[in-house]
Image (cartoon, rainbow, N blue to C red; front, side):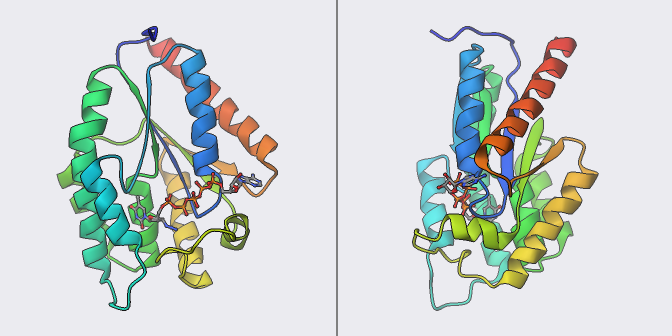
Length: 216
Ligand code: Z5A
């Protein structure tokens, strides 16, 4: 049985472009927290519930029809509404720590930055769908798009991965801007070998845990 270290659960997200190492480092964080006795739930967006996983498939499928930025954004938030209300909030209320691969920072980066949707629309939808629920800590893994794409070159490309370099440059610019302006976001240089990146991820987590311990 898991030891409950602290009553209130925490919400931690990993963000960044394709192939930067989000999934890999999320596993590392999960292991560290589990070793320290926290009850951890690992999940992802889009996805995390059966319905949201179906929406993910719709979003990622390559298709001839042009998907409008607004339609894409509404699909992302439909999946998020289901995920937040049926998985994330109940887990946090139960004192669990939720580790999520991507969240609304991705929507600012991809739909507002990449697709050119007005950021105000993302803000409105975020307020509507998850209100004041924002991650307690976000680790943003930063690397040039070409590097991340090279790391996942052996996988089939989804609809996003088929985009041009300029799209990913805009995505990265928004992420970097948010890393500067949002206090909860820690930027980590993910262009280095995995051991260095994971060391920084673990250090950022340590710092966060120290803050949690002080506030307890
Ligand atoms: N999307 C959106 O548009 N709007 C939204 O609001 C949300 C999402 C939430 C699917 O996300 C798509 O959804 C995404 C944006 C859109 N667009 N795309 N594509 P996803 O998270 O499932 O897709 P992804 O970013 O492509 O995930 P990924 O390919 O699995 O990347 P990753 O998780 O960051 O990387 P990884 O799997 O941990 O690592 C990839 C490989 O690199 C693996 O072999 C590792 O061993 C290796 N690796 C990792 N780090 C290193 C280092 N430092 N050096 C060397 N090799 C490494």
